[in-house]
Image (cartoon, rainbow, N blue to C red):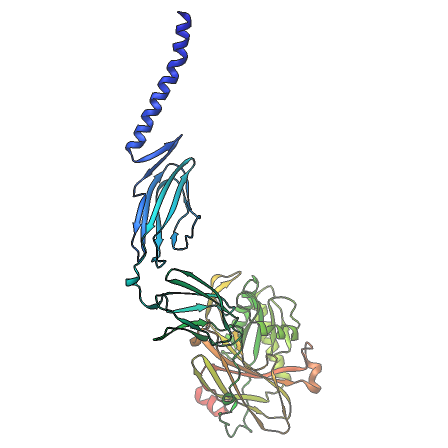
Length: 497
């Protein structure tokens, strides 16, 4: 009797556990799902899809009590089917399956498997082929292709029932690979890098015995390439003003601020130079030369070497006097004004500039007249600068306003040399260039400054910066003309008073 009791005691728990497990399974089946252990998985959509031969998107909906992943059967080609998700967290989920048109000439199917721990669910997607009678004799599935200037592979898909011939005439494009699947053919073309300054287009032709269909492959221009000079742009079309020889030129000094947007100390000098400009009634050209960072303009490194810049910010006044970033803004302002006073006390202003300018399709042309009162060696530098650039500046935040930022240089960045052999000589020079697409043309100006040889006055220079100083400068909006700036006559001053 005791033996029978012990036997029942061992068997009954296992029996009831089996009964409860059966109830759990029945409960799972009643919800249209499966469960293994603690994982619950319920399908809320079909598990077998027969999609349209022309292509279709279907949605798979399910819920899972554990994170899940989706795999695609790779035993056959599955390039014709794609999914928007391959994994997810527990809860309600939806996967979109995109199926391309079936031009293969035969039915096809693929199996997707969703797994959540030890639970898995297979989903079948099947698709009949498009009948041959419904397929055009020849068609290209896209109109054109775009590719980067660095080159690469372009893929063109065509559908055909008639034989055709491929014609490639441009040397920078070559056939790379062709793969056929029924009526669908994929042509791959190898595109070489574009070293040019402008976009280029090639037309690949697919020709049947009745027609030729072109396909355009468009390649962007190399952003670092320089547009070659048009001989017509070298023709000077300016105006030489008269009666300037006996008049006094107005001096417009130049303050160069070598800076970078990562420089936390640099905004202080910008404020100081703006204050100096205000004290001079706006008669100061402040240039922000970014030789590093997000607004970097690489040609400026030549000026950085010329002026022996050791750190940011550094100010150079009239190409001859260095101004540091002092402890207070007012001190830096005073230092800049003293440097300008030094130039005007020791050197008379011997030069001025006028020009006629045009702007069309981001291309600027300027015909300069440079008026030189004394013989000697000169250098002419022409920049396009942009104002009101809103962007990041360390020490000032993400909405800092950058002004006087060089975006393009028309001349040599260190200046085009000119030798005046006599007094009261006029140099006439034509420049042209295309503005970068990133620039706002409304906020851009032409800045021209003339350097003059120190010669016997080199002892006055506060730094050995190549034997030249900036004699004068001028500015005007792109596309606008500029006239000589003269010192107002005493009669005019009296009238203004």
